[in-house]
Length: 53
Image (cartoon, rainbow, N blue to C red):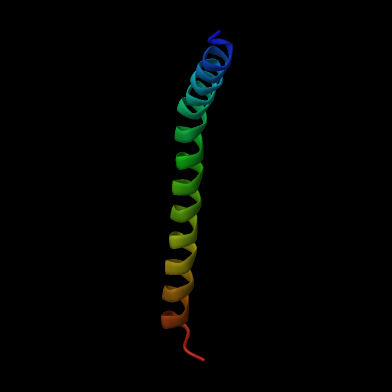
């Protein structure tokens, strides 16, 4: 029969539904972390320029 095919389709649909929920969250976390890293990097850079030595 087509039992393996239906199981595979169930697995694929489950994975896709999970990804559709998790992907935006993961992308958002990555963007936030990158933004924080850039802000910290810029603030450190500007502080170095303000106080040489």
